[in-house]
Amino acid sequence: MTWQLAVPRARVMWLLRLAVRVEAFRGPIGWRVGAFCRYRLARTWGVFIHPSATVGRVQFAHPTSIVIGEGVVLEDGVTIYQNTTFGARNMEEPGYPTVCRGATVYAGASIVGKVTVGRNAVVGAHSVVAMDVPAGSTVVGAPARIVTSASHPPARNATGFGRND
Image (cartoon, rainbow, N blue to C red; front, side, top):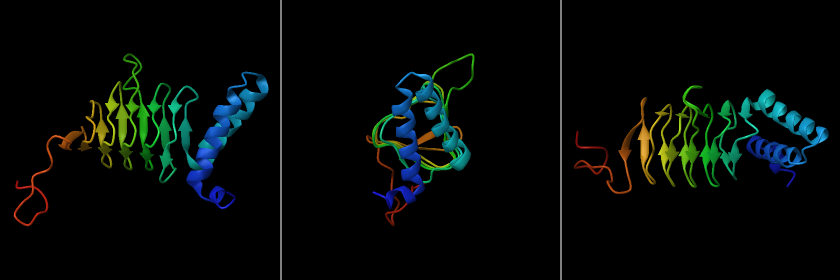
């Protein structure tokens, strides 16, 4: 157990779990300790997780510069890489993303608005997702577009790699 606390992603999850449990006590002590834990997350690793966000057992592959907004729901088994943002599209149109089990969000991706990223979906690096992502799909680009889905596997060329474009 002690060696796990030397790994940054384990420390991030440990501090997050501590903050959530302590804030449940609703008193001034619980609020202050929870706020201190969130402060350490933001100050040390640049990870901001709003107290109202629902975060399951998420894997932070590289826990730096991650922003998780107010109403975001991250289910168990989600993998998140560095420099990712989850939040509302704008203040006039509140709505927050839901990321389902087994999804992977790669570096630099932004998921904004009231969207759902389906089970086992993959969001490519530096993608801007403002639409629903079906389960088992892969989306890339800004704005994001679906390149593979569970019902339509990618086309292969004669060598067996890539597309026939």
